[in-house]
Each structure stands twice: as structure tokens, then as C-alpha cells.
Length: 168
Image (cartoon, rainbow, N blue to C red; front, side, top):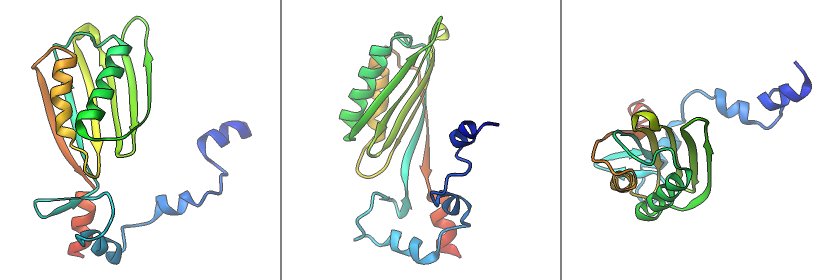
């Protein structure tokens, strides 16, 4: 393997990130500080839980326009607006003969998609932390792709880690 390939894999880079990646667990003092209500962070506190963010797995079915980059980018922008998020960057890629993949990088995390327009299906992820309201993205997707056939699963990212550390 050439040095360039190793560099692309991140091997040999002395950034200190490897120490973070291999750390086991989060110190109890850090977790306790996350639970404090007056702490200025972007963790969410809801229903007695503290978690990093809300991650919605959104399945758009029987949708139209899922092969159109411009429509997907417009939907990303509308979701960012209605959810109260902050857009940093959008990147999409159109496949041949069909399909689009893309990501909107947000200050609050991201929105991503991969589409199979030949069957009317789009797989969207909406992950947001802080005060953003990711559930508002669902109605944007229904309108943008002209369908009411949408299924959503919610993950509370980081919830398990915080709960384990509090119990320890």
C-alpha cells in the first residue's frame, strides 16, 4: 500500500484522535455535568432523559421526484428552515441511470438521503441536536415527494451511554 493510500486511511496521522476512539466509557463526572440543567451544551433534556440528539430514520414510499437533485436540495433547505436548524453545506450526487444520494451538513448534525426512484423509495436520516425540531421534517418530505406513505423510527442518540454512566 502506498503512503498516499495509508494517509487516506488515516494511518500514521498523529492527531490524538486514536486516543479518543479507544477510550472506554465516559467518566462519571462528565456524565453528571451533562445532567445539570444549567450547563450550556447542545444535549437535549426531555421527559427526564438526557441525550445527544434525535435521529429520525424516515422511509419515504410511493414518492415522486426522488430522481431530481434540485427537488432533494430544496427539500433539505426547507427541512432546515422549518426545523430551526443551521445549514452549513449541501452535497448531492446523481447516479446513472437513476438515484440520488446527498447530505446536508448542519451545525446541529445532518440530514442524508439515498433514493431508489424506480420504486418510489427514499431513505432519509434526520439527526439534530440542540433546540432543532427534527419531527417537523416529516411533513416537508411528504409535501416535497407527494406522498403520505412515510414511516419514521426515532433514536435518542447517546441515551444509552448517559444512562449506563449514571447507573455506574
